[in-house]
Length: 430
Ligand SMILES: Cc1cc2nc3c(=O)[nH]c(=O)nc-3n(C[C@H](O)[C@H](O)[C@H](O)COP(=O)(O)OP(=O)(O)OC[C@H]3O[C@@H](n4cnc5c(N)ncnc54)[C@H](O)[C@@H]3O)c2cc1C
Image 1 (cartoon, rainbow, N blue to C red):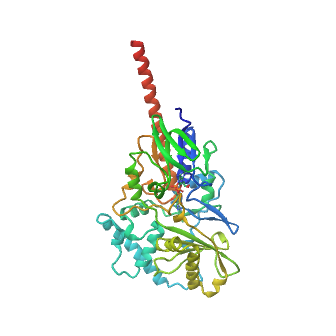
Image 2 (tube, rainbow, N blue to C red; image 1 turned 90 degrees about the vertical axis):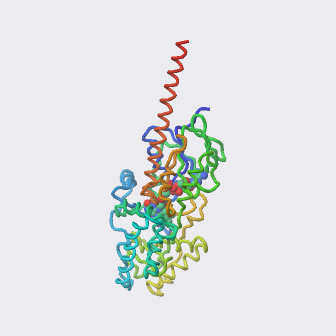
Image 3 (tube, protein in one colour; image 1 turned 60 degrees about the vertical axis):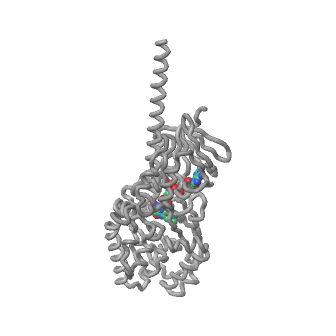
């Protein structure tokens, strides 16, 4: 049966849109199937209280080599290259600077010890100082970075991201999610609210089944999260067990956000930062009045994000409100009110925040990125060798998969042409 498209992309997050942009540049025909009623996946800007707030990705990490910066500027999205708020401590907090510096030094020393751990157990918790004063702080930062406890993090993987990062964190005031969702080329056919249920290989490509029927193409690019890959929502072709095993070695951690509205004039300084409690591994990182907006954004990772996942948004609001009262005084309690809380871990089409390699499993990213039978190509943040956990890593993985798919299609066309010529030759001999 004739194929309807050159390539079908499954998933309309940063990776799917990165793939779509590359396929459009190749002049290929492409269909993008997205399960949810919106584009962007873990890139999602919502208008909350009148402000474009990012529920998922927000920072253009490694800004000087982040593909989304060029895309933003080419499409008229301003990019803020200023320092992120976490570089500016809120002046009203009576912080103990000695303690803060000691905690930060302890984190640096832990990172140094990861090198030795990487060549042994590869378990980042083995780099914690037994009974160390600042272990709770190290756990909290590792939670922000990976979404899980250090016992579940590969030291090799953790260091690969750190080594490659350029440390420049830029921002799109209109929202990273707005930018990603606006970047699908118009030449790509889009079907929203169309979850893929099954992928089969055919003689000339793939057959992709959804509730509304089956579509065929020369190749497919699968960009869903590792939680979706290991679940049972999509039936993958026989022979893909090693890909599912690789995805299982790269589980999604927990990271969630809680947004609070500042209801009346307070002493909150704009574009400032606060850290909840250096001695609590659940503690949140607070962005105070980002872009001058009357909003506080609390970012929770690992143990902190577990509060939201297991106890729900009310418990999350209560936890961050208590931390803010402890930092700024009891007056703030009447000045802040809940605005929104995320639930990435509970969302069936995502299932968590971002991937983290289990100890000894850093090679799983390369295994997951392998093409299957030159028909099915894998992309998504988890497949990037060092920019995993990010929207720019997801984008670049989509572009890599698009190039692989096009190479495979061209290879098959060349093979078919040669076969045709050979058949013609045989006929003339007869
Ligand atoms: C709280 C939080 C904060 C973050 N902060 C940052 C940050 O500051 N900077 C940064 O760079 N990154 C950040 N990230 C990570 C970043 O958002 C992700 O790495 C990136 O967006 C992942 O893109 P993706 O395309 O790989 O996956 P996804 O965005 O998950 O896209 C996959 C898509 O597949 C769809 N899908 C699932 N199942 C099916 C199906 N059966 N059929 C069709 N479609 C399906 C999903 O709905 C989804 O849209 C953050 C993430 C979170 C959760």
